[in-house]
Length: 294
Image (cartoon, rainbow, N blue to C red; front, side):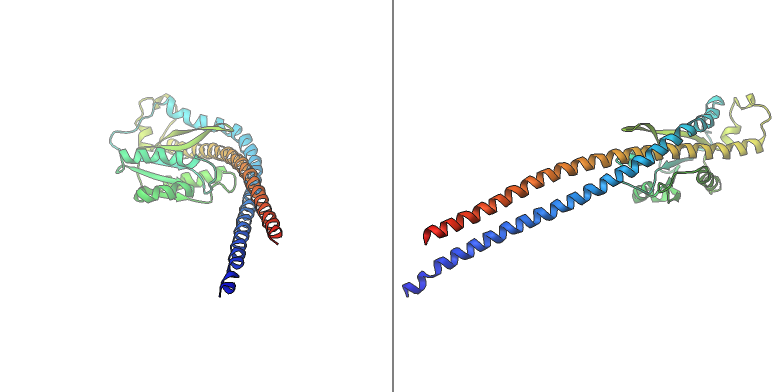
């Protein structure tokens, strides 16, 4: 009996050793899978950084040519000193975003400004969402305030034709407004941008301006034509500014993500080597201990 029970001790020791080996192999396998996953993510972020860098250089080059158009269109409202009419409290906000993410807080900064305005005057304020990012965020709480939305923004560089179609849809919408704002991101540098607004006024607000008679040969048809052209020009300018800010922010974000992935790879590699060395050392100790016991 005692002899039969005495043979259980080596079996128990062998099972414990087998469990330890399996645990060590499982840990090495999980670290290896994690390391491979982070390396793949780093390849993706590096590729996205290179693509964004190419798009950013083109967007910045085009933006320098477009800025005089936007500045010229906004000068008319400043020189004529057009103000929002008191009898029309309705406002219109146009959010310039895109459909694509992974670009920092470019879209959320635009939505945050509009959301603060909606909290103060939700009843008289309507929103036009350019891009799915602004629509997805605003429709959770202020879906009834969205009168128009468009997608397929950000995949290709914006054109004046896109801005003209958007301006035509806004002017033909059933919503009547006295004044409004285009909320966009103004590009400053590769790592900096500002969320700003451009004024938008209705035909009645322009007609009631006190300094409008300074301009000669202005009738209703001329004012209406200029209103349509200026709205399209301002939208085109804002979309170009937003596209350049988006690409620069995405390039910076992907660069930071690649650096973070590199740091994780170094830590995981060190952990993997230490764990593998510990498993090898433990196996050697078990082999030497078994040889010494024999």
